[in-house]
Image 1 (cartoon, rainbow, N blue to C red):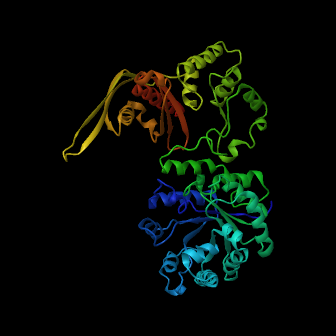
Image 2: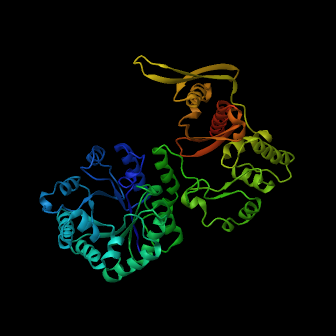
Image 3: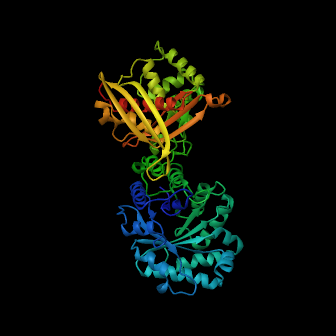
Amino acid sequence: MGDRVYLFDTTLRDGAQTQGVDFSASEKAEIAHALDALGVDYVEGGWPGANPTDDAFFGSAPALKRATFTAFGMTRRPGRSVENDPGIQAVLDANTPAVCLVGKAWDFHVDLALEISKDENVAMIADSMAHAVSRGREATYDAEHFFDGYKSDPEFALACIEAALNAGARWAVLCDTNGGTLPREVGEIVSAVADRLGGDRLGIHAHNDTGNAVANSLVAVDAGVRQVQGTLNGLGERCGNANLVSLIATLAKKSDFETGIGKADLVHLTRASRLLDELLNRAPDRHAPYVGASAFAHKGGLHVSAVMKDPKTYEHIPPETVGNRRHIVVSDQSGRANVLARLKEAGMEVEPDHPRLPRLVEDVKSHEFEGYSYDGAEASFELLARRTLGEVPTYFEVESFRVQVERRHNALGKLVTISEATVKVIVDGERHLSVAEGNGPVDALNSALSKDLGKYADYLGGWRLVDYKVRIISPQAGTGAITRVMIESTDDSGATWNTVGVSPNIIDASFQALSDSIIYKLMRENAPV
């Protein structure tokens, strides 16, 4: 193996600055444990004293087994000693093994924002690092706007780095804070800094405002730095931070550098990525490198034939090494090869001369002509295939369903909209009637359908929806347009599957997708008929 690169995660701070993201203390703890299990070297928990959530989180800090838990703050304020600076004291009072303190490295900010001399700024950095080290902490200096500072006044920017390292900091991190530096510049500047100071105590912190955060981080590693900072899924302010998921996989699979994440850890990478999306209640990026649902998806018939003979033709790594899997997409462009490959992926060994195979290919094409899309609805495709081949058990029959939406004033005089669904299903000849309210008609229908399925109730444990998409197939038809509903479901195992429904009625399309999702779950659980 090559040189050791240390991974420093800032999801719990930088990620929390993302528009629309607001972690609770318990969610922070869950993410921290997932990062720790993955093998990340440092988990930065946030800024003690900055807000009640971070105070609560550090007040009941997670017990990490592998990662070094780190508190974030800033260097001492001008005109104060470190002993009398309440900000630094709050960071140290968090009692974490390590601290990361941010300080200016751009002369423009020192002159304009701080209105102090350059020498005072350098002294603030040195005093803060020395104080943290004297209190038994491993210290990191985040050099804010380092690349802008280096381009403006390289000697001053380097003096800030040297001050931190000479005062005992373990790491000095070169920050591209506004994300405006390009890979060529990063390589040149980092090489110059590493040549002068050595790279084994330098890190990189890149933002993604030009879409180059991962590239800049990798270039910096090649140029000499040995710590990389980033966030899960590239979460972060504005356009985000360097995507630590992509960095982990690339360093592990595409370089000679060593990290703390071994082969056995790497297979959990996809799960860690999707855990964050689940906590944020948002759909994972299907096209995310390495971990996206479409990262190893193959649609063209010629591509599929080649992949089935030799995956390396169109897959740069084996998907299972990062916890992902291959997807053979079935669509109206599909041929027999796609269908056979997708059937094999689903565990269905079907001979190429199976008498019902041509019927299945034609069913797929005709369904997609009607508006169905099996490109991304693998579970519905598998059910279609098994039905055509006569292999799907009849777990229950839906006798009828009804959805009501009422808009009225509640007891407090507030105008509210109430959705209520009624579903009648037959299980083993016995009728089950369920009524449920929900946050909208589809949510109510979902609750009613899964509320009472008799003997199958126990097999639905942990089943839930994680994403719901609606697309109008024929917008020219106005309110009479055909609607396609795509639903993504999951369960406690972490598995995800997608189903589709199509109808002029959005509720009917939703019910089709919901029903398929439940039937697929029961089939996976080998529920008895």
